[in-house]
Amino acid sequence: MSSRAGSIEAVDGPVVTVADAQGISIAELVLVGDDHLLGEVIRLEGNTATVQVYENTGGLEPGEPVYGTGGPLSVELGPGIIGNIFDGLQRPLEVIETRTGAFVHRGVSIPPLDRQRQWLFHPSVRPGEEIHRGSVLGSVFESDLIEHRLLVPVRLHMGGVSRTMLAERVAAVTPGEHTVGDYVASVDVDHRETRLQMMQRWPVRHARPYRQRLLPDVPLITGQRVIDTFFPIAKGGTAAIPGGFGTGKTVTQHQLAKWSDADIVVYIGCGERGNEMTEVLIDFPMLVDPRSGKPLMQRTVLIANTSNMPVAAREASMYTGVTLAEYYRDMGYDVAVMADSTSRWAEALREIAGRLEELPAEEGFPAYLPSRLAEFYERAGRVVTLGGMNGSVTIVGAVSPPGGNFSEPVTQNTLRFVRCFWALDKSLAAARHFPAINWIESYSEYLDSVEGWWSKNVFNDWRGLRNRAMGVLQEENHLQQIVKLVGADALPDEQRLVLETARMLREGFLQQNAMDPIDTYTTPQKQVAMLRSMMRFYERGREIVARGAPVIRLRELSIVAHLIRMKNEVPNDRLTEIDDIGLALDRQLNELESEYL
Image: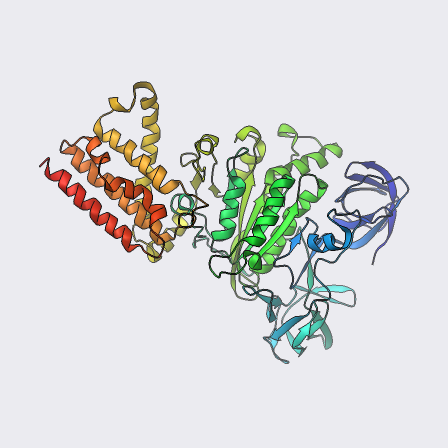
C-alpha cells in the first residue's frame, strides 16, 4: 500500500528531488508524479530525498506528489518467468505490447507474472512434515524442459512482521491447478497457521542466501573449442568478453546461450542498440535447443533494456537478471547469465553520478564503479542451496571499450573481479577469424580447477596436451616479429614447422563457424581427438625435420588438408573417423621418415 511521501521539487533528467520527504527510507521504491513513475530513493538529506526514476521524466512538474511503497525494488518469483521477455523492471514486454502497443507508456503497471494462468501443482511434502527455508514444497512444469520447484520463502510475513523462516511443520497442502496468487500450502508457526503462495518477492539488490559455497571444479562446456580447451570457464565462474565494435561479442554470447550445458539461460540486453536487441528477440524464439529439440525459449529468460530506454533502468536490469538466476539456482539448476553489456551499465552509473554532482573518478565514472562491478560478479558461484541441492550461477559479461581500448576503466576494473578473460581482437575479426578471441591476450584462472574433471571424464593428459598446443601458438607469436623483418623462408626448418603447426591450429581448431551445422558445436571428446592429431603432426614432424627432411615435404602431405577440415567434416558422433585420419597421418609420416633414415 502506497502513501504520500512528499512532492517534486526539481527534475534533472532521471534524477528527481523530493521536498517534505516523510516516512521513506534509502533504497525504497517510490511512485513519482501523477503518472506513478517508478523510482528509487538514492539519497536522503533532512526532509529532502533524491530519487532516480526508471522511466522517462518528460512532463513531470514541481509540486506533483511522490508516494512511498514501503519496500525496495523487488522482482516476483514464481512460475511464468521462463520463456518471458521482461524489461529491466521485470515488466512483461509481450503483454504490454498486446495492451498498449509497441511502446512502453509511462507509468504502465502490469504484473510480471500472469495472474490468470493456471498451473498444475504437485506437492512434495505432506501435512505434519518438517520443512525449513529453501525446502521444496512441490513443483509445476513451467515448460517442457523446466520443472519449476516451488521453494519455501526465506522469510515469512506474519501480521505485517517479517521473520526468518526456521524449521516449521506443514499444516496443509493443496494439490491441483492454481494461479501464482493462490495459496498452495500452509505452515504452523508458533501455533499460528501461515499460508504460502506459489509466488514470492525478493529485493534485487540483495543476494539470495545459500548453505555452502562449492569449489568451481566442474567446467561449463560450451562446445566452443577456443574456450573449452584453451580458456575454460567453470560452472559458477565469471568471465569477461571485451571487444570493440564488430568483434563478435553478441554472437559469442549467443553461441554460449545456445550450446553451453547450463540448464537455464538468462540473457540481459543492457543498453544495447535497438536493432541488435531486436535481432535477439527475433532469433531466440526461433532457436531450437540442441539437447532436446524443443524451442530454446523453454529454458531462457530475456531481459531487454535498449539504449533508447530510460538510462536509470539499465542499472536495475543487471540486478533483476542475476536475481532471477539465483532463484533458479536455488531450485538446483545450473544457470548462465549473459550480460550484454556491462559498459552500458557503467555509463548509466556515470550519468546518474554526474547529475548528482558526485566527485568523478577516471574518465568521469563514479568512484564506486569497482564496488558495483564486484557486487554484481560476486553473485556468481556454485553452491549448496538452503534446500540441500547443488546449483550454480555463471556470469559472462560483455564489455564494450571505446575503440577496443582494454586500458579503459570498465575493462580494467572488470578484470579485477573475473577469473576468465576472453579478449576479442579486431584484427582477427577483420580477417574473418571467429570467434575472434586472441589466444595470446586471453587467460583463464580455472585451468587448475577443471583439470581433474577433464582428466577423469575426457583425457587423462588434457592439461599437458593443451599446454603443448599453447606453447606452439606462443612461440609462433614470437617468431612473427622475425618473419615481418626477414620473411618465413629465412627461418630454420624447426621454426618453420612451428609456423606451419600454428597455422593448422588457427585454421583447424581455433577458428569455428557458428553457421556450420557440424562445426558450430564440438564435444569435449572431439576437441581432444582433434588436438591430439594436430600435436601428433608437430611432434612427429620435429623428429623427421631433425633427420633432414625439409618442412615443405611435411606441408605437402595430403593428410594436412584433412587435419584442418575435420572440424566440419567429422560429426561429433563419428570420432572413429578422426582415428582413421590419425592412422593415415602416421602412415604418411612413416613413409616420409623412411626416406631420411
